[in-house]
Image (cartoon, rainbow, N blue to C red; front, side, top):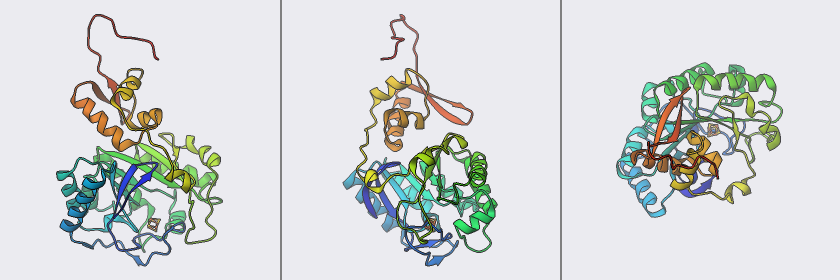
Length: 316
Ligand code: SF4
């Protein structure tokens, strides 16, 4: 367990490492943890669920993180107790749970069922065709990109929480137009709530792995739907990033001007999603905000009540 640590995507995040070091179905060329030592897609009960749950709850209660992030030095869905762990956390804590995953095991319905217990799922997609997938992610033998994509599409079909899809862009490789266009086409099938472009900023397994300058990453955003955002930053900037706290009055002021998705609110107010979602859910419960599904995305808007016409129509 580590943190809470500041993270641009997830604010003060309490990280939970669910697998022994470098246990992963991938062996990505850009991995900052070094070569995969246990290359597997077999799930296993690496740790006792009850002990992990108790430790997470104790740390969460003492440190009050914005989110509990299930991740680690490998692939967290390999932990066979994942579903029980999430259920145990959610039964005793209101801190949102996020799952960072490479999605390799989502072809398994049981993995999809367990992952769906999380509030946020952040899978990665680094390739648009199988040859590039085999090169960049170096998966366990027999695993294909189509299987991974189909698993994520099925997950999307059933999952009501947020999916933020991360694409790792490597200079001179992924940034080539044919790769980016193919990745964007696959991403559209997965229908994520947000697409986030990243690039390796720390030393990787292979020396040829280079990061893409931020301005260049930004030029790729329009290829994706929804439009991608750049999340890559110098590590110092991430660690020193200021986060605005989600605040009900600011959110209501924004929603009174136009309906917004969770991602719109976070962008508009420079807040982070877990805390913002909590405030939105409270506003929904209080009946001050309503939600509407449009083109597969949830929009929040201020509930208008009939009356004397005294409401302000001008934006501040
Ligand atoms: S999926 Fe993550 S942990 Fe596994 S090899 Fe790739 S970067 Fe490393």
